[in-house]
Length: 304
Length: 304
Image 1 (tube, rainbow over the protein chains, first blue to last red):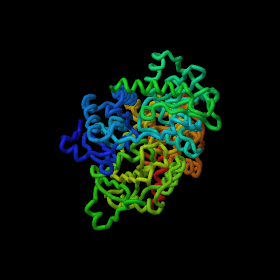
Image 2 (cartoon, one colour):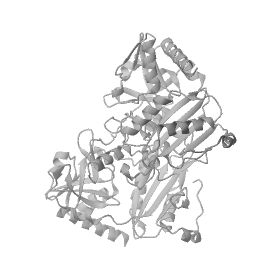
Image 3 (cartoon, rainbow over the protein chains, first blue to last red):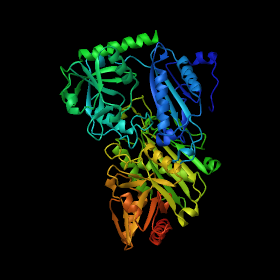
């Protein structure tokens, strides 16, 4: 791994901060951290990334996130010029350099710098960027009152062009859907695939409840296999809940009893309105709240 | 425009170089130039760009390129925090700071920095990056012997997801197609749309010749409207050549008499083989060479 800085405990204290960014092992404060404009992440979005949240200062399900990071990289033929052990060590250095229990950790690996040429072989060696920051609690209203989503006119990238299962630096597709949501006063957008089925939110997975049945779209609808999504599929089964992966059209979704989104940082957020349609009673549903309780207990059990 | 540096002639001489990068008006050498890792161009590929070539130190068809830059920005709801006059002035400062007649000029405008949030409103103010460098003549063999392309398995992004007509920082789609080309020992790849028609090369437009008929795919096939492509459509008509925009399947292309690609930096490059099929005689065709002569004359007339 290139340019890995040496970072001593005594230096670290001076840095204690609410936000820290590490570039190839050199830790600095935001505003002092930069990357070459020749980096392919900047030029082409030629990068992969992960976001995890710490509970009690422990990056949650880090192994799962790193497994996905490696899968994303493999999908775009990107090798890493550092070991997984070095990567984990750099992540923990960032965590150690910030105060607070609840930290947002973003891990970005780019293909690196090189001649301006789309050929991946033009890249020399990865750049590794880790952004760590205190994450304030999200507004209680999201969880207690629920949020509104739209069904975006922007279709999710097709698996045959850029697989949405790859968490890459190409996020303009989702930026455009989010822009449409904000234009319409919504919290977020859900995106359809070319068959008209729901794929995912711009940074979350989507679920519905029909009776006592929890349903989320299958991976082959063209979506990112969320870590929280995966945990919930297992947890729901384990807790005797009726759960399955099925294609969901917007029409079906709008008739569901409950609806919610899941993400590593937001956990479970009830969706109470989609476009102009209230979902169920228009208030967060009991099944959504029950699943969130199960998830919270899972987090507690995992970190204790 | 923020952080626009003042750049005097006397400073400029010290910089005279083969490569210069300007970030928000501050000119420096490569290796000294960087951008915040919080820039949305880096995080999401949330940027637009143009590439032009200088002839006799004059950025060729700059107005056309800037028109397209503004169209790209508008398509992704990006405003510029500087005027077109300021932009042109910064481009010429970069040109003035490099020696040589034949310069590659890349103009990148990102949505800027801000909170980590897909919402474009999170961005504060654009970052403007201009990369200028001497561009050595391309190998004569490209023009005299022609090049080999493949038809990529990676489909070009759909207009309903990210319009290929927008020249943005989301280029992973093309990077994957180029990786496939290099894996197969080819010069480049051409990409199909979802209907199976040819759209474009990874950084070029594609043309065929059938008899005395020049044909290139229409914009609605989902491709970037190349500046050279547009010039050639006009020039061909003006010179009494038979030219049209039509959908082209790979099967049709492989039966064509001639085939070539066009780009602002490469001008016209004959394609003599696609996958395992020789095109025509397997050598650069006379009609391709005639059109290139017409284009070269157009360049000469334009800059004199």
